[in-house]
Every structure is written in structure tokens, then in C-alpha cells.
Image 1: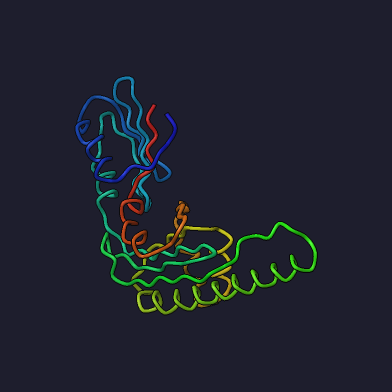
Image 2 (image 1 turned 45 degrees about the vertical axis):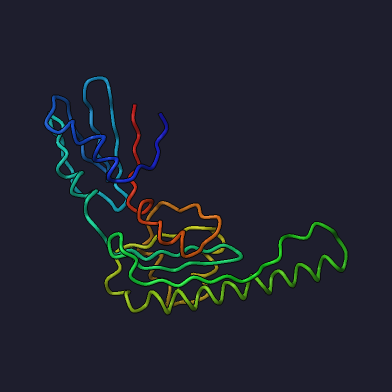
Length: 206
């Protein structure tokens, strides 16, 4: 079975009954590998797992502790057309702002009209990036000292452009988690539903 992301409550429901059973558990490189009978379950918590060790039984305490721990997380979602910026204290959204700006789609025809269309699209995209960068600074800076992690989503190129647009946002790169979130339309509703995905663990069952 391929690895998938599973909400932390569902992970606990899945592995909780295995606690203390005969088997083994290996904690290494930010993951917990649980072997019981003929099944192997590898769990990678979203915000890391510092514990290292090997046990000749199913030992879940370090993993459950990592899964249950809440964090202060900055979220930046950007696509050409809209953006959403938020700060989560655990699963609670404590600060946020969203915005939208029309950006023309790609023009397939050639000629001078195509060049005008391209320039107009580039101007619209640049305006969106500038607006998103300003909002990100305004929303996130007051929380900077408390933010532990940063999560990005939407379009990778757009995110990179926003971060490059304002030196004040450089610190977010240092706190970025590995997972990049697929978001087709950044808006308030999407932001408010982020906690499930933020705290979802990567689970690989074999």
C-alpha cells in the first residue's frame, strides 16, 4: 500500500489498540516503524519526531506524544488569482486574511495581440504577488516570535515569488515543513479547514 496522509485522530484509532502487544517498534530519522505479526506500519508525524530507540514490543508513547502535540503554524497559500494567509495556534485559526485579484489565463494565439495579452497577464500576476507579500508580512510579523513552523500550498512558483518579494518573509523558509499542500483556490473556507491536513501524518502500511 502506498503512503498516504491520515488525520491524527484516525492514526491514533488505527494504532492505539496495538500498544504493548508482541512485536517491535523502531524510532529513527523522524519516523516510527511498528511491526506486529505480519503487518508493518510506518508513521511520520507532520512536525517531526525527535525520539530514537528500539523496543521489543509495540511502544507508542513517543509517537502518540508527537501526534498529539499542538504547534503555532504559519500558513501561506498562493495561486495566480488568490491567496490566503493564516496563523494557527494548534487547530485554532488566530489570525488570517485572504485576497483575490484577476489574472488572465494563458493566450495561445501568436502575434502582437499575444504579446499585449502576455504583458497584461504578467502585470496582473505581479500585482497579485505584491499584494500577497504585503498581506503576509502584515498578518505573520506580529506572531513571528511564537511561530514554530510554516506550511505552504497552492502553486510553488507563486509561493517562491511571494517569499522573494519581501525580505521580511525570508524566515518562513527556515521553518517550512516538507509537505506542500495542493490547493486549487485559496480562500477563507480552505484556510479554516487546514488543521486536518496540517496535523495529518504520513502512514505507510505493508
